[in-house]
Image (cartoon, rainbow, N blue to C red):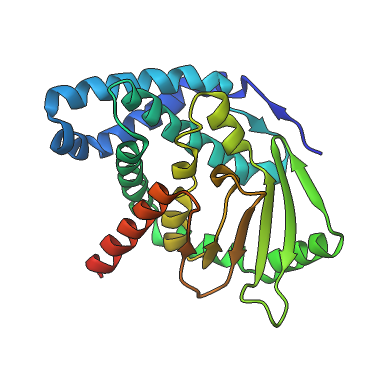
Length: 249
C-alpha cells in the first residue's frame, strides 16, 4: 500500500499555474471562436482561479509506481478546473468537454515524435510484460493512494496483450470530492486521445464513473482504440470524436 500526500504541489504552485496559462493560451482561438473575445477572457480568468484553488488539494502518490498516476491526477485537476469555471457561466458538461478535448489535442501535438515512440516502446517492452505478468500471477491488487488496481495478462484466446482493472479510481474520487461528479465520465474520455497518439491499442467498455464495478483497460499492440461509455450522452460525444477523426484522415 502506497500513501498519498495533500499539499505537495503548493511548493510548485507558480510553476503549475504558468503551465496552465500556456494551455489556456493554446485554446485561446477556440474560446474566442465559440464565446467571443470578451466572454472568452472572463472564462479564462474563472478557470484559472478554480485551478489555483484546486492545487493544494491534488493528491500526490509517493513512489515510482505513483508517477503515471500523478500525471493523470494533474490532468484531471486541470480539466475539473475548466468544468468548474465554465459551469459558473451555465455551460454543460458536454460543452466543457469540447474545450478540454481541444486543449488535450493541442497539448499532445507538441510532444516530440521521439518521446511518443519511447513511451510506446516502454509500454509494450519485454520488461514491462515481465513485471505485469509477475503481478498478474500473484493476483496482486495494488493500492496506491485512492487507486486500487489489479493486473491481467492476455491468454491465447484473449484479444489483448495485458490489462488493468481499476477497482477504485483516484481521479474519480478527486472529481466527486470537488464537485465534478457530473463531469467525471467525460474526464475518462481523455484516454481516447492518449491511446491514439501513444498507440496503446486500448479497449475499454466500462468505467467506475459510469457506475460500473470497475474500469476495464485492455491493451493490445497495433490495435485501434475502442472506448465506449455506458453514459448515453458521453457515448454520443465519443461517436462524434470518432467521426471527426475519420473525416480528417
